[in-house]
Each structure stands twice: as C-alpha cells, then as structure tokens.
Length: 486
Image 1 (cartoon, helix red, strand yellow):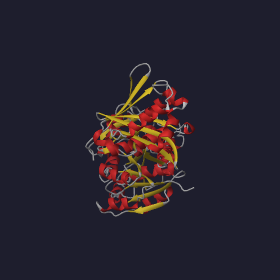
Image 2 (cartoon, rainbow, N blue to C red):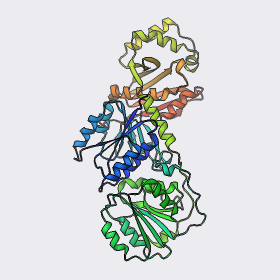
Image 3 (cartoon, rainbow, N blue to C red):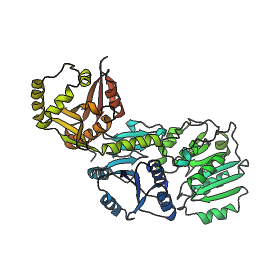
C-alpha cells in the first residue's frame, strides 16, 4: 500500500543555525515507518544531507534566493501531501497557499507571532496555552513537553540522576552555527572555576570560529575537547557523561533535560525567550541566567545547581504519530453539500435509536416532518448540510446554521461507522470548509451537547472548544474565529 507523503520544509545555515532542520528530522524519524518522508531545504552541506537521508527518502534542493524558494516549493506539491513548515518566514498568506493546494499543514512554532491556518501547530515550550496563539477553529494545538521533538537516542530511558552533583566535567553546545561565538565566551567565563577539570564542546558544521577556538585552547589549563558535527548517539553520551551542561533554551536544552543532566541555560536569540521565561526559578536543576550575549557565568551560577529533575515525556512520538494519522484519515474524507437525493439517507440516520436518545427532542421523526424540515433547510441560504464520504461511502453528516454571525453545528455519524474515531477529523474538515465559504459572516462556532452524550462531549473537547455548562443537562461549546488575518 502506498504511504501518505510528508514533505518537511526547513532551512539551516551559518546564519540561522541547524535547529529547525534537526528538530524537523526528529519528527521525521518518529513518522517514517508509517509515512513516506521527504525533505525540502535551501542550504545543503554534507552533514545536513547525511542527516536528512537517515530519516527521509528524498531531498529537494530549493533555490537559495530569498524569494524564489517559495514558488518552487509550492510547485512540488500535488495536494496529496502533509506539509510540515519549520521556520519564522512563512506568513499566513503562504500557509493558505499550501492549504489551497489541498495539502494538510503542520507548523512547528517558537514565537507564535502570526495567525496560523495550519491543521496542527506544534510548540514544545513549557508554560504556553491556547490563549498565546491566533489560530483557526479547526487548528489543533500541540503544546508543551508532551509534544517535545526529540531524536531517537533521546527517547530511550535516561540514566538516574546523581543524588549529589559534581562540577568536574561540563558539556557546552550553542548549536550548529553560533554566529556570536558564545562558545568561546562561555569557555573564557569558566576558566577561573577550579572545580571544572574537563570541558566537552560541541560545534556544528556552520561554526566559523575554529581557528580562534584552537588558538585559545593552548592557553587554557583545563582539558578541552572539541567535537564537530557529531551524531545524536554520540551527543547523548557526552550529555550523560557530563556533571552539568551550559546550553541555550533551544532543542538542545530539551535533549539535556531528557537525560537528567543539570543545566545552566539562557537565550541569545528571540525564539529562545519562551522556554527561558517558562523555566525561570522553577527547577533547581535548571538555572536560567538570562542573555548569553551579555552575561558572564560565575561560580555562583554553577554551585546553585541541584539534581531535582524536570518531568518530561520521553515517548512523544506516540502523540505525534496519533496526530499525523488523524491528518492522514482526514485526507480520505470528501465533503459534499447535501441534495434532495440525500433526504432518505438522512431520514434513516436521524431515526436511529442512539441518535434519538442523544437529541434534545427524543421522539421519532415522521417522514412528513422530515421532508418539511429538510426542504426548508435546503432552501435556506444560511444553512449548509454536508455529507461526508470515504471512498464514496457516506459515513456521516454535518449541518451548520448561521444566525447573526454565530454558526451552530449539528452532526452525526452513520450507525455502522460509529466507534471508528471519525467524528473529530470529519468535523475538522467541515469547519475548514464552512470557514472558507462563510468566514466573513461568522465570528463564533457553537455546539450544544447533552451531558449524557459522553462521546460528543469528548469530541468537542478534542477539538479544543471552550465549554460552558448551561445547566445540569446541557454543555455549550464555543470557538471564536479570528478576522482580518489574510
């Protein structure tokens, strides 16, 4: 059976570092058994190419020009792919162009500085919630450490943390580029701390200060080992061997945390601020010092470290795989507006025993009542009824009634297709469709569910609607729609 294709789009260079590429490849590595993973990027070194082919079957080399790469990437898409974007320069309009191709879209985010029309947004910084994001009602937010993007060696169970911290061996890594040469500044700042005997430094293929670093090494009294462009397994071993680490609040911090290694951390670019702020003062094993560009590490910073550990889920691939399989399922769905010929099918579904039990009016519906109601709805320009199909087989219906910019949802799954987890992806597709058709006329999407209808309550919770208990029998779910974003 042909696998669904995922195309990852990320860049890495001496200017922007390799963080976007590495974490996108971590996600690809989690998914490549179930999906055909390909990678599109502008800057290709031997190291980047070798890392891509460990997780992906194909590499698309894009033009390095700042503008040309946008259109070239769009030309690769047929509409049958899931696209993963990881960088800051994809505006809302470009996201919409990818969606308009028919693709499912996932955005990996750090700074949540734009409106997202993606189907899924991933931000693994702790401390964020949905109020930090501007997204569409169908967008699923995957936030926090339960959605951390770790490479496979870091998903293995870590060794137990030492009860008493030592200060003899330190691990230092400031990414693949480190264009401000914070690596050298950090080594200089810890040179006078006598307890530190050995320094293991990791730099990337884009690091531009090797000569300066090598010259300075001869002046140091400590043992300093330099490692360049090492693989994830070797990196994990260095982290495990260290008594503590000095690293930025980026993906490397999460890899260090996963191995129970205490760390001094901070930021040197804006996209690291969210993780930095969320961890300040919360854990004795993580000392957040501020801006590495201007801060000089002292012995006090190091001696304040302890060995309590931050709880981190080291099996995030289960959550990510579940979400991508849901997107794959959505790609099978076809939604068509209902016609007169669908009347009998909907009459059959509406009179199903379970459907009637979960309805506010539990009485059976007569043919005459149904026909009058259905004909009225078909002629109502403020009503949309969609039939959802998988391979030409009808599996459910979604109805939207629009009143004063409020869009009210009603849905049901065909009796023979219940229990197959179709509701969430079907409603996501339907919500996306109604927004495209009527966005200017809608500012809220609403549903009311009987409290005894646990499956539907769960559906709207998974769709991340806001819930309000109207009374003992009914819960009202709402989602706001953002305007003027495109």
